[in-house]
Image (cartoon, rainbow, N blue to C red):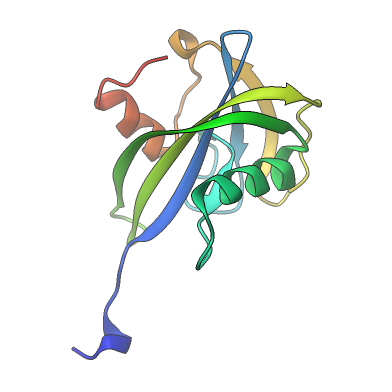
Length: 137
């Protein structure tokens, strides 16, 4: 197999934004996991810092400003039916200001705040894997 034929996992960034003991989730649209609840986030770009990616994705998707970014856990996510493999790096962040807006309606239908103990379903695979690992806030 040549280097050009090697298939590698994607790196996803999920941002766990905390506000008044609640976290922000959006309902996915138009991609694998459609209809599932997810954190704001996206793909890490080539040569991009993880914190930069987290801030960029949150602002692009929700219009929110965040602070106190810190490394969280990671998951190894195998979307077998879709033939996709992601390693998702989670970033913990604190809400600063703004109201969550659907700024990419082709990717997300709504944003809502939830307590960790009362997450909606279905959850996007990386969040389900996070729960399986025993992660909690």
